Amino acid sequence: MIPFSVHNTYAWEGQDLFMTYLPIILTIAIGGILLFLRKRRGKGPTGLSKWLAAFAGLTFLSTSLSIFYQMVLAMSITGFTLAVTVTIIISALELYSVCFPYFMH
Image (cartoon, rainbow, N blue to C red; front, side, top):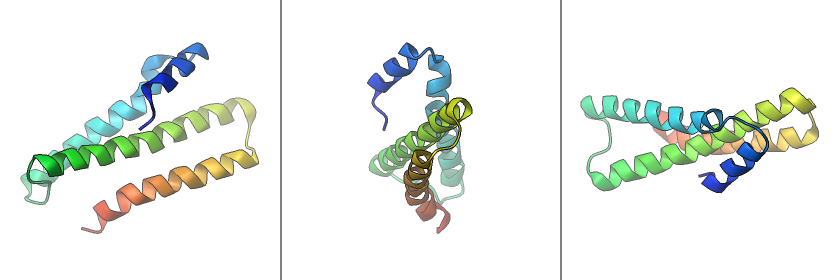
């Protein structure tokens, strides 16, 4: 997960802290709701350790989405560069590693 100290850097850059935390908040909230709905259908995590593991996965996913958000924000100012391609690949791999097992069940 992105260290919270990074958000101080975002604040120093003049970014609204709510907007920097929004991808994290939305990922955990929407993911928690989806996990709860899966649990009601009998397919969700059972036991405390599995719920903690599921939310750990959501925080990992929120890191990827936060990177995407910052990348889009930077691209809106600087334009597309080769470094963006590397960031897209790394973030897509994170997203794939978290979401692919979920959709295979």
